[in-house]
Length: 195
Image 1 (cartoon, helix red, strand yellow):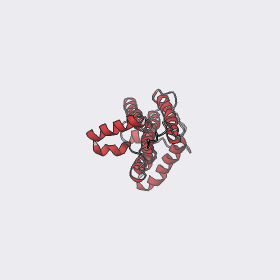
Image 2 (cartoon, rainbow, N blue to C red; image 1 turned 90 degrees about the vertical axis):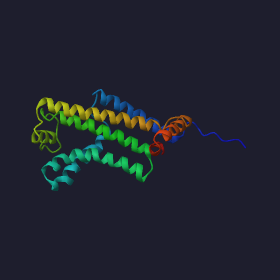
Image 3 (cartoon, helix red, strand yellow; image 1 turned 135 degrees about the horizontal axis):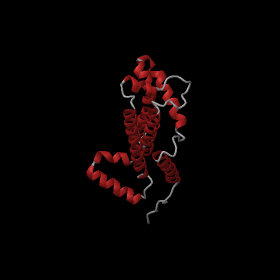
Image 4 (cartoon, one colour; image 1 turned 30 degrees about the vertical axis):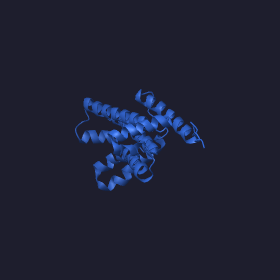
């Protein structure tokens, strides 16, 4: 009896490849500063605003910082959820990309801390103007350095998320070889390539 060859492309792999092409395109546009918006910003803003609401009882600093903590923290928690609870490393890799995208979004907000040109939901105070002022780093070089560092971290995380996710659309043999090599070097990390 001969072995039945698996199809090279199934619906799941095609969907993942198309999603990665889209994420890759957005990564290039965000890294090149060609855009400051992507589709997940429709979710990012409500998470940001919810952070202010949920952390308001814990003092002014956490109230102001809460928006950024939730905006970045919810996708970070989803990485854990997809790995630990669902065993879906591809989804976790996409969430890592999302964390990076949020850091770029936050860096744009940080960079505006002196100019105060970005429109704010409901008016109100500018989170990063308030935080940078409170901690004595509202001077132009400090704002620039912190925003640039946050942006760089965002780009790195987006690229890592993409690289991780790409492993799930590699040909079966290439993927198996990669898993075997990883098992020889870091056996516990193999689960990051399963799913």
